[in-house]
Image: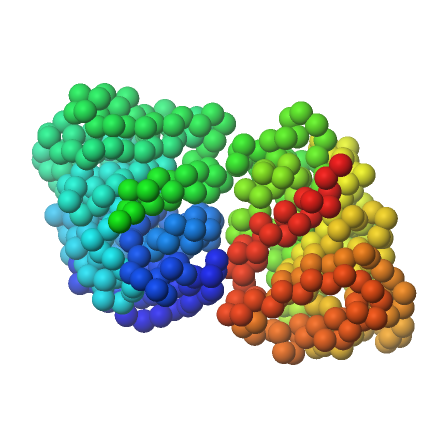
Length: 277
Length: 277
């Protein structure tokens, strides 16, 4: 692992690191904020998964998570959203290929060799974080935005013993049913729709996966809400499954980091309460 | 005035606007955050001046001022750092010309027609803000970073009745004596060093200008500190003049927005206390 940069912030350290990923077969960059409390004891880890077109850097620069993380004593890890490179497959659209990994393991050409973000986030990065940072890996949580909210929800639902809590900003909750998913899922996973259900939060709940509770904030003026982010099926699935879902519709807020940063401290504090010893 | 964008944030509105500047003879872009309190009453105005290479956007995206501004009920205005455009004079260096206006009124060719950021910030923009936003212009304050800290200090010292308070992050306090100033001041103002003193915070204080108090935060690991930001002469001048200077040296912090954002809330709250009715 190579250190790209470190900057002191809120008495902790915001770092950017690069390593050779086995899952993605390319160098991958990620950001880690280590709070001041880590000087004295291992700290819990909160994973933040970003949305379409983003790298590790967008939320690091615009997400305003450091104050809350420093107050709560939480490490925040921000992976990239896909493998990247001139020799990595890509698509002309912003919603498939580089910057659009959808936190799944692809099975189809040309994506399968590199697009394995599910394994990368869930299996490859955690041991690296455990080795290189003062992290208490018995206390992990996960959240994300849009495509990253989809990632957080699906990863948490499939690994409820690993992540103590899960939340999301404006997540894709039912990719099977919306244009973003209907483009990405067949490209990465092929035409067998049963494979898609393994990466759809609503379908996972319908198929019996469960977490105790979920926190979601959704902007009411989000231009992606009607077509891509409609959560009715997800809300209904949570209700049927007995999942304690808090769904905050925020009038006037859009899909941007202005929305994310506004509610970031709420989410970090919510996870912090669940990550306490 | 044209609206470029508005985004809801912390229950207020972060906007970006463009207008034709008379002082700079070109279109100028600026950012304004209007807090939720402005729905009910005019709010005080805190001006933020950015540093070399920045536009209005850097602090808007990375400065983390909105939470504090929304709590305190303060409008924050972030101007650009210079005139801009293909037909505007420029220099190959990052520290002269576009992105490096130094908050002065240039008298020398080729800069004089457009590079009038002192008049722009101090005389042209305030009436526009007063007309277009729910601002209480009887309550204004000013702060900034690096070159923008220099701008805030010099503008406040020359207009103590306009700005109730002034603070800075890592300001250039004595441009006459450092390489950045020794390049920019002769280019913009010519070789008469007496003209330079009108845009040097230390010289202004030595020449009798005064404000009651100043707040400065300076990173101890700032790579520009030794050569460009040394504040010994400024501290001595404040002491001789009886200015109540709080100078916080922050070990380990650099010159970046990670430093600025860490201490942003402190500065906004400090100004808010002085802008209260």
